[in-house]
Image 1 (cartoon, rainbow, N blue to C red):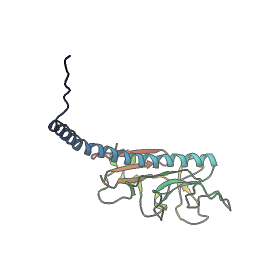
Image 2 (cartoon, helix red, strand yellow; image 1 turned 180 degrees about the vertical axis):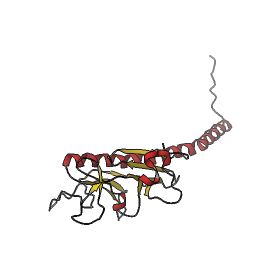
Image 3 (tube, rainbow, N blue to C red; image 1 turned 30 degrees about the vertical axis):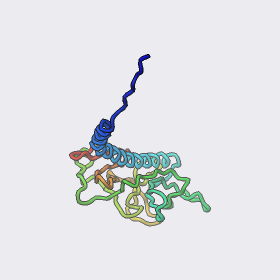
Image 4 (cartoon, helix red, strand yellow; image 1 turned 90 degrees about the vertical axis):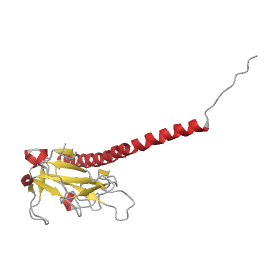
Length: 212
């Protein structure tokens, strides 16, 4: 009877394999992190776009003005959210936006790694979006507070605004392209969501040289 011997890995061999795996992991980590962060930014921008499209749909369906609303939990228990302000379910019931994001209203949470920002130094120019996005035709919505991130839709789905704020003052159709800017807190990369006067929504990502 021939006795078979089984040979395992030596400690040196195991250490070499582990070292190789660690080197490969170290090389791959930055790429993986960049992919995750880009996804966080794009996902937040698409969530904002989804809310804007839902708000337009609700304005047409309800045949009345509907606003979008940006909400930050003052306690910090929940992430920031962007939603549709349809009014108060009551009591009393109101059929106009009340400036409050109710739990029953459509809304999307935003990643805490992404911040909605306004125009300022370092923000890429919008000219690469096309001729309809030149500085003269664009209004950038920015912080702080609710009104600066608010888009209002009329009953036919067009974007409207109130030239003179106040109860009873008229709302008229807008003639500007609105831009909501988002920035990743770590990479500082920008995303943008644009809304045309007709209500068309589009998501853009700044790739370092142009909006795409």
